[in-house]
Length: 307
Image (cartoon, rainbow, N blue to C red; front, side, top):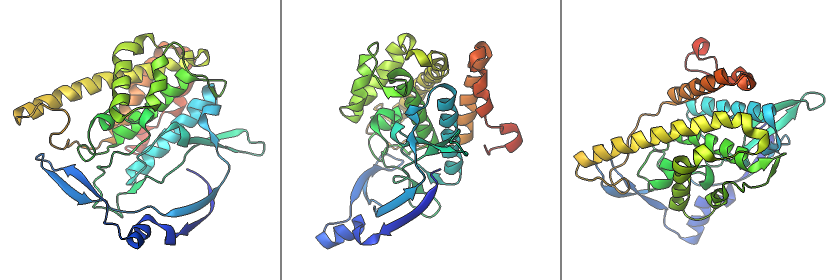
């Protein structure tokens, strides 16, 4: 988490006050009920202007090798712990995956999950159902990209999937701490442009047609084994989920993946993270160069559902 030194809210400039002064109606969104009925509902909450002073942060993309993965998994665990405490970040992206330096000489690297402006406190706002389609497009989960706002609940696995896309982007497009693109996978540049559906099509095509031949930057060739296996697992899970959803909606008389009843699914952060580490353990067992990654594995057996 960021180390906050000071902050100041300017409540006179929150969006609710501005809308009231301008005589604008409350914002509404169209959502789907469980039976597929479209209804309009007020958008809960408003944005405020807040100035924050924190300890200096640096982009995680500057890091290389073990330092990068160390900070990456620290951020992932931070996100998990906070989600379990009913604070949902909802926007993991490369720009808010940061690190800070600690120690007398700045020799200690601490991963930091920054930018909590889209986060939701589910305890203080129990009426919030997590139906907004939030995120940064290149890293958003495919389910969120292809389903209309209000049609799918934002779950932990969606944010977790975003972290995998973040690592994918870095391994394919960053070298020596700088963005260099990827000549072997030119379609990656288009992930940042176009519509939600365009990005979803490109990322789905990458999983289906380009994953096996994708070439990471040379410095990430070892670590790519981990991410490529996680992406392959993601591809299988997405295919299975879409097949199950098609069968479910066919029984209800609608085989459409988009525009039907809201998708209802239990949130299960513990299982998602356990499955990830089971895959990583398998990769490390076959590649001794990656054994060091296991030091970041949560001790599930000792801490139960807490990591």
